[in-house]
Image: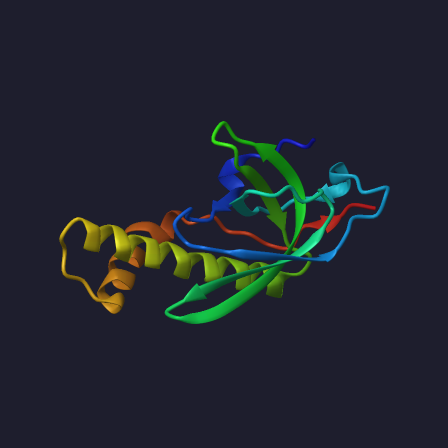
Length: 148
């Protein structure tokens, strides 16, 4: 298993449902150490997916499905019976798409949290607040390419 600094990964909010679809199983010689990693996304799942697998992640933003694709670079079992997957991206367009989708997921999470605390807030105001408070510290991610 490869250890990569978690600060380089965007943590997908646990209250934002996702669906995963495996697009490509790993080749028998997949080696995560061969990758130069430029950040990624961390998601929690209940079923294991082998490192090296290419997957499609789907979630819903404002009742519309959105997807992005990533490669599983590492897995980690958690104490609460979930499995964390570290996802990387093989081109800058997919990394950009994943980062934008994840920002929208975090804004929806922020809106739900504010409503649960009794604040009356619409999606636009929640987005403005989240952007002002959190976007400067939101991890940058880029393409993570094989080194050989």
